[in-house]
Amino acid sequence: MRVLLLAVLPGALAAQEHQMMGHGEHGEAGGWRMPPMDMTMPMVPGLENALPPVRPFLIGDGMDPAMFPAAEPSRRVVLADGDTLDMDVSVVRRTIGGRDYAMLGYGGQYPGPLIQADRGSRIMVRVTNRIQLPTTVHWHGIRLENRFDGVAGLTQDPIADGETFTYEIDVPDAGMFWYHPHMREDVQQDLGLYGNLLVMPAAPDYYGPSHREELLVLDDILIDGQGLIPWGEEAPTHALMGRFGTVMLTNGVDDHRIEARAGEVIRFYLTNVANTRTFNVRFGNARVKLIASDIGKFERETWVESVVIAPAERYVVDVRFPEAGQVGITNTIQAVNHFRGTFYPHEDTLAVVSVNGPAVDDAVTQAFDALRENRDVAEDIEPFRALLGKPVDYELVTTVRVRDLPVPIVASMEADTFYVPPVEWNDGMPMMNWLSTGTQVTWILREPASGRENGDIQWRFRVGDVVKIRVFNDPESFHPMNHPIHIHGQRFLVTERDGIPNTNLVWKDTTILPVGSTMDLLVEMSNPGSWMVHCHIAEHLHAGMMFVFEVTEE
Ligand SMILES: [Cu+2]
Image (tube, rainbow, N blue to C red; front, side, top):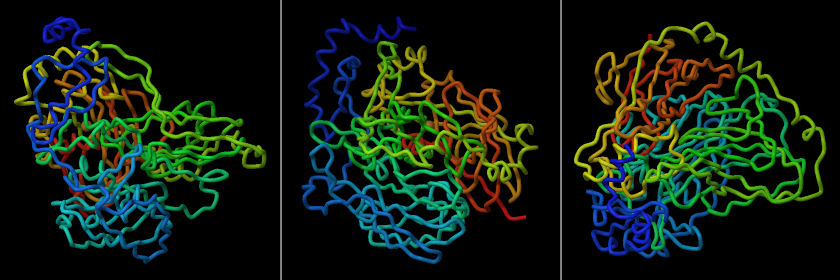
């Protein structure tokens, strides 16, 4: 297979690597510029002048970013039962790496306002659209009333420029949730439309003790020396692997800093809002305790080396910083070079923690050493315990189909499947990925039993049904990739992966399916309506990877 790969790379690799730096001539053709590429990744011959077959799109195109108001850092808004928040969607100026960009913001903030509400309350968010793109807001992971789920064309009409839509949001579960558009997420979410919704538990000791809380909203953005790389107007670019960024953003900035004291226990709420990047988050030499995920706590706390967080997932960890000094919060991965078939260690800094004195050593510091068993979670799961081993009700397979891709891409990709990693931690083939659009690539959720795919899948359930769904990520497909699978409006348990039962359960709304892997999801159909199942890689979603199921009242 390597032979075929080299056959489409005539000439010495070394010679090609010298072509890597200047792709300026691409700037003319309709505003497309080739995304930056790593020096170790050669250009594929035959693609030197290729462009994505869609029009390039930038927000506020041609306008000086100075025309737009500067976005402000996210602020916390505490809403009591019945309160309403007014939040507009607008073009804002953001400064990243010392450069100004026209981007989008909720309430003029980056990320959008941190909305805090008590579990069991109902809050209203009145969204006014002040951008030319139609939009909606999806309340990710919240088991709310279907008509407020924010899915354009399914639960509501798009909110047009100048229009307002009021979301009434019931929050039945404690945890960290988030909100984002459910229209062209690959563009709108990437441009900054995301924020957290923190639902506070009733019990004061729901979590163990900590000194304080920090949010880590993880994102990346694709920028070169000239600015933002345009998005595809009619369909997403980067449809094969999703749009990986070149600059890491934590809470919307590329230089996030946190002050801490030695011995301090900080509770970190992690949310991955990136289009496609899965992060492997490490906290240097600090000890990390895994507490909770999407919809509440784990059955028991565990010590972890790192946290793997796929797009749209949330994790909650307690971290104790042992001593004074600088600690990097990093994305520590095994990157892949698809041309060489090689893996190499890579680290991105997501934030820097400055740990200073005087040291803290109080009851909270001491309590950190203990791991809690969460009896409340075990009791909540108890009614489902007998169903964990039930037979599979429905099966899905993930695969991909391509048409009209340039021949060099197809040839390289076919060669490439020889060393495809279970998780694509980085973009190991930036040019081919960029050139593949949603017009050429169809990502598929296929139901083998019916032969139906994506929107043709027809599932109907009743409230109270508990359904086991097996999902298999076919490694033999043209270009397999990991998929974060998201189910709207319900909660599920991952009962097993690759035949190994999960012994520390947690309620989820999104979970990652690596290449070649099989996972079983036990879904509680608790919420009536029309709900989506989809891959949360924004480009995969807009390359077809979704369907709708119905849940009806008794
Ligand atoms: Cu996907």
